[in-house]
Length: 258
Image 1 (tube, rainbow, N blue to C red):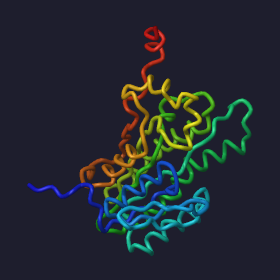
Image 2: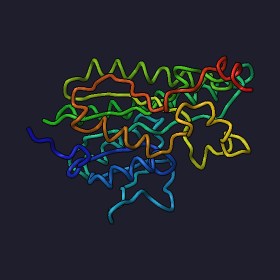
Image 3: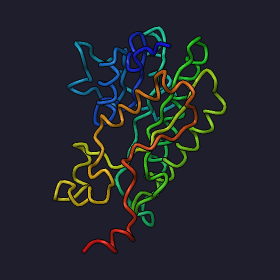
Image 4: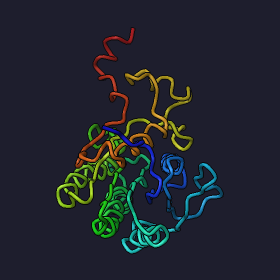
């Protein structure tokens, strides 16, 4: 029995939403390094696009909260590469907001970005992938907030919980041609998120994590390679926890803080 390189994506086409910065940027770079052709999207083109081994990701300007624009991203990738093998629904996020006073407009926008937009992109991707002999893989980047809400994240938590349920529903409907999986991310050290971890650079926060460090974007990218590749050919509707074991329970921390 021989096993091909599970990290070789040569000849595969990948779309990463929100792939112009942060976690999405590293996911796109990782797929490029693995040999894939990659297209990223964002509302504005960055000065620097993801690149690896002398190849650069393609870019499409789009607000994927709009269903037509989300479909246009997928169509652009299929037209350029002649196929679509992987969609990583990475775009998302939210600032903290007080649920008692937050505007309904804010709530709707957060749900649109974190739940509706991934569905729009996935629906368009399925139209392409379902016609291919090799099918395809859709990966939704979720959050530990879907399982363990934090204060100030009501809209984000609701949307991410919905994304997890949506993943399982689509996995049922679109198999066997298209696999749909979910990654539950924990605390991730990125430049954009640095301010939320305190003046100590996150040192206190890491004490609550069994792995004694926050994730870095490459941790999430590696999980994407696994879910998109041949080693996960029977993985469908799964929720892969990439959070370092979660957080140490507050009661334990309180009793053992001395």
